Length: 443
Image (cartoon, rainbow, N blue to C red; front, side):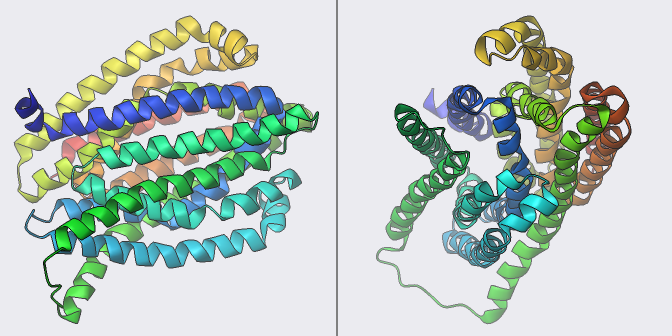
């Protein structure tokens, strides 16, 4: 049985990551329910508004480098252990410098970002705490990329679980202590949970890396190598990381505009400031996370597809790439249809009994059609990254977001949040069609 699984590293790796993803998402699901009851829909809206800043910081630091390290490490043979470590260490050096700079900028100008960029002064203290997490998050992402490139999924899975566990424990402890004295918990507790969760996750993977490095280097003398080899390593990493970072940064910038403008457009539609933030909080903090929940497996599958497709592509094995793509697509379409039906059937229960917000159930029911397309888009992103089609991913993401922004600016003022829901469906349909077309025509 063990031998049988060893022949299918993609399935084995995806299963390991999936178990971790499902476990952490279950914890995260109940965590969000807890937050919604502690802070209410408006508080959830304020918390969600800080997401774009964190996303843009990660896009500048760890996002592209994680993928670059994973791809470069997967292309190195088992005999080249030393070179694998060098890809990681150079990547860590680069992201450490950039993430510390991001921390300084966001922490120093948190008040300006809160008022001028997010249009919500209450986000300033949250941003200051979130800024402290950037170096830990970037380093964690790089080390995860190293292990995923080696097809070792246990440690990324364990670190993911540790991050979620620490986050929830910190927030629950802080909120409980305040509630016990009759005080209202502060919104920045959520940011402290995220920050300390990243510290815990980095500790897990960092310790495993240190132990593994000592094991492989004991008894071996380190051999110096020419400076041109250093340049080759840097060039390989930056050649892939920079376009990916630019992609993520541009995408996250547009997503930031989208996130910030939705509450403002809802106010133009006729809602009060509080009602607009509450509507935004219910949609992005309750309804959408439920729909993203099954992405636990599809996300894990996408992470494992990247090195597998990259390896097959480097060998010119088109038949293997075709087999991987067809099997993965069949699985996620089936999973998307199944979960879409389940969400439609239990939408009222989720809204009324779980979140105590009937409107959340309405949004879940309206958006359940998105499931097959969201999951397909996730795995095709991994496949195209493995084929080195970063530019295609960039184009699809940008044009899809521009579509959504059109609905934000022109549909929400006239039709309210319903206009945005239609925009989500249209953009996902477009993205799915484009991903399939790009994969079919990829060489």
